[in-house]
Length: 96
Image (cartoon, rainbow, N blue to C red; front, side, top):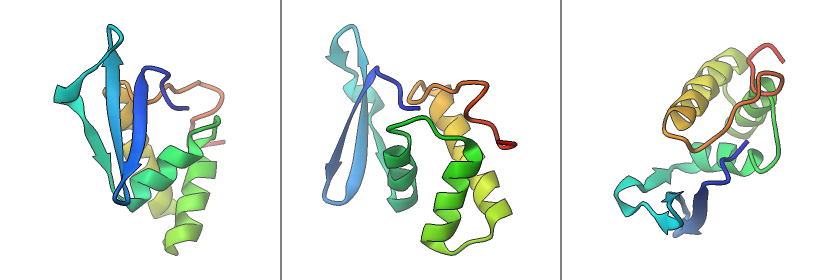
């Protein structure tokens, strides 16, 4: 699920994410997502499992489910590492 400590806007088809630190936007840490990242970000408005995210990516981009699972897991883990998402042990797992 998305972290409540970020602000997101879609500008010219790109999703821009700005972390909020101390009630101020951290402009040194702006993230930009491509179409796939934007799809995942939109899906994370509500809790989703990794399998649910991967199924949506596989369907939208007509890619193999296993490849989508690997790619989604990598992307979500990168977002988690920089504090853009929060992962619940019961929701965001590849096995769900």
